Structure formats: C-alpha cells, structure tokens
Length: 302
Ligand SMILES: NC(=O)c1ccc[n+]([C@@H]2O[C@H](COP(=O)([O-])OP(=O)(O)OC[C@H]3O[C@@H](n4cnc5c(N)ncnc54)[C@H](OP(=O)(O)O)[C@@H]3O)[C@@H](O)[C@H]2O)c1
Image (tube, rainbow, N blue to C red; front, side, top):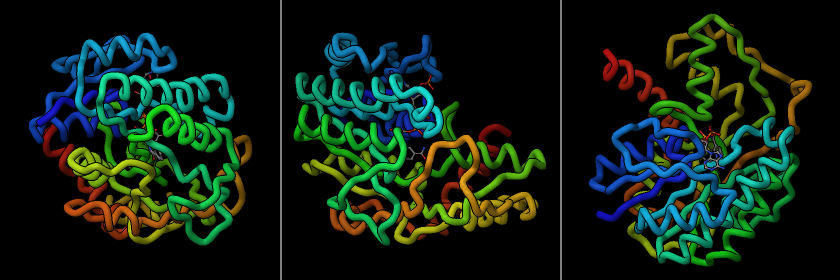
C-alpha cells in the first residue's frame, strides 16, 4: 500500500478517510490548519493551503503517493459572509495542492459540489453547464477549473450531501441533526431542496478504489435516487426513533441564509461505470448505512 496525505484530515470526511486508510494498510499523514491533529498518533503537518510554499514544503517532507484535499470552507453561509477566506481555501488552496501534487508526482483528489449548478434542471451530468447561485458554488466552480489547469491528472469528486458521523469533528449534517432532535429541538427542513446523498463510508471506499485506477477528471458520487431534505430528515428521524413532529417542513427560504440551489440531482451513471467494487446505494440505503455509524460509535464508546 502507498502513503496517503489527507489535507483537512481533522474534519468530517478527512477523519473517516484516515481511519479507513489505516485499516487498509496505508501509511496515513494529516495536514490541517489547527495547531494539533485530532489523532495524536498520526504524522501531522500544520499548514495553510492558501500558502503554496508551505504546502509544497509539506508535500516534500511527507512524500505521499496519494494526496486527498478535503480542506474547505464547506459551510455555505460562512462562505457567503467571508468571501475572501472562501476564495483563499476553496480556489487558491485547491489549485496550490494540485500544483504541488504534480510537482512531487503524487495522485491528487479534490472535492467539488452540486452547488456549481443552478438547481433548475431535472438532472445534472458531469458535463452539464455550471451556474452557481451562491458564493460557495462559485468557489467550487472556479476551483474545478483551476485544479484541472494546474494538474490535468487530478480527480475531482462532485458531491451533493455527505451523510455520516465524524470521527472527531467537522461539518456533518447528520451529527448536527441527531444532537438537536435527541435534545428535543425542532429542525426546519426545506421541502424543495432535492439532494443526492452519499454516505461517508461509500465515499471513502470509492476514493481508495480510485487510487488503484487511472481515472482522471470529474466524477459525481451520490445515491442512485434523490430526495428532498424534508423527506430525508423524516426518514432519519424514523431510523433513530426520534419524535417525527420535530422535523418541520420549510416551504420558503430561511431568512438571512445564502441562496440554495433547488435540484441537486446528480447522475451517478459514470461512477457506476468507473467503479467496479464500490456500489452506489439508493437514498434509503445511504441513510441506513450512515445511521448505522451512530450505533457502531455508541458500541465503540460503551
Ligand atoms: N459535508 C458535506 O455534506 C459536503 C457536501 C458537498 C461537498 N463537500 C465537500 O467535501 C469536502 C469535505 O468536507 P467536510 O464536510 O469534511 O469539511 P470539514 O468537516 O469542514 O473539514 C474541512 C477541514 O479543513 C480544514 N481547513 C480549513 N481551512 C484550511 C486551510 N486553509 N488549510 C488547511 N486546512 C484547512 C478545516 O479546519 P477548521 O475546521 O479549523 O476550519 C477542517 O478540519 C469539502 O471540499 C466540501 O466542500 C462536503
């Protein structure tokens, strides 16, 4: 097995990627912006991906064969408020890492989002025209172009919504929802935002499978069917035996929030052709696999 460097490894997807990498026999290193790594046993490099010299120095010291960059300003409303920061991380940082990976001859994998689309079409393929409705989507769209210009061998995974529990911390919708509903708090769920979720375990499996292929370019990863945030949250509530009345349908945009694209319906046909061992699930199967992580986490911590 090779060596993986997970940039943003302290976060939601990064934490799971590190855990799975170790289980598969990879040497695992983490780079992140925080002073320390959430996993104290890990080789750790503190660096800001907005700084090219810092990132190149990290790559040369660590010498990974695979670099996965999950570092991002992934909160859509934060990206709208702090546009300079979002640009630095999601555009400049993504490009810096692509260039640095090319420089040391490592494979580079980065994450985009269905927010690059306007949400008006019925279904989006990898080639559909882009027209983001918020600044986060703009940074991802621009990031895609800059990454491929800097390193044409890059892999860009476009995701709609990632479901699962974090190892330590990060931007997990499911973890936030579970905390709220089990504490008796209501959550407002848009009925007209359709998403194509992937569970974090399937996502990480796909990443490790892609490491053993020559695939380059853009690939959608998600479920084989799509669902509204309201219907998906109601199903999660049922799966975790929470009070269904706490899931409140939202018919209008929430005030003070960045605009959202409506249809995040991404086709995963290409992923089904490219991936031989990682199966894309239905949206219900995706929710069930994500929710199973809550139980497993509970058993581990018991
Ligand atoms: N989660 C989803 O549902 C979803 C959906 C579509 C696409 N995506 C994309 O998937 C990727 C992974 O998302 P995630 O949910 O795992 O994000 P996350 O939990 O927020 O993790 C991102 C990590 O990157 C770190 N980071 C931020 N700025 C950095 C910098 N300048 N240099 C180095 N590290 C930095 C963060 O540190 P701090 O926390 O200290 O800032 C955090 O540890 C992102 O590209 C995201 O846009 C996610």
